[in-house]
Image 1: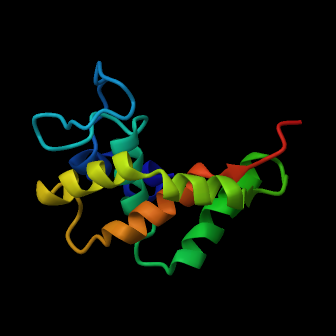
Image 2: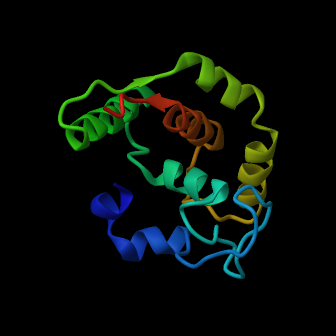
Length: 131
């Protein structure tokens, strides 16, 4: 979604595209102070910060939900609130990743870290019917 919205040049200014060789939740960045790729926690948090940051949180949620509903041929996509609350409550490692990236100026200027993390927790909490 972010690649479609911003293009690879902008996206890869903030997140790499190479394997890290470390665990998905490792607290590390590549030599350019970027997450190694969008498929690890740091990269997913970074992508969350890039996805429609100018919109209010509710509009960002609706944008993602509608996108996934189109991909699933109209299936209803929702947030599993218990998963969301659990993600937020146990997010110590994700906060550490976010603060590390913030300290290294990895995020685009003006990024609201807490908003990006809340949005990330929402995206981690989507539920869909796989049928």
